[in-house]
Amino acid sequence: LKTKVLFPSLHGKIIERYGSLGVFANTMGWTPSTLSTKLHGKSEWSRGEMLAVLEKLDLPVTEILRYFFTKEVQDNNDF
Image (cartoon, rainbow, N blue to C red):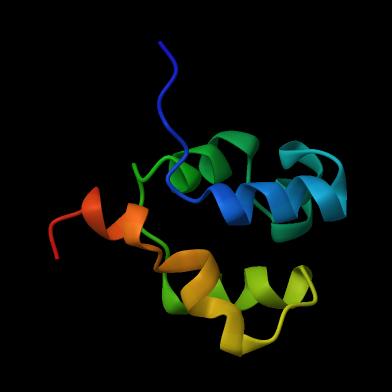
């Protein structure tokens, strides 16, 4: 059973920049399953993790809303 990716822009940017989720997970010091749980909303992102992801993707901090706080993400969480 496939679950929906809650961070599609982030997922796309990771693939664009690193070619695969596994390669990116490795650069973050994570297992691929750790990254997957985060992208599917099964595990929360810490502020430090969000900033580290932006840095690894060469994105400015001002892009944090675009990649981590989209309407789709908010609709799938209890805020």
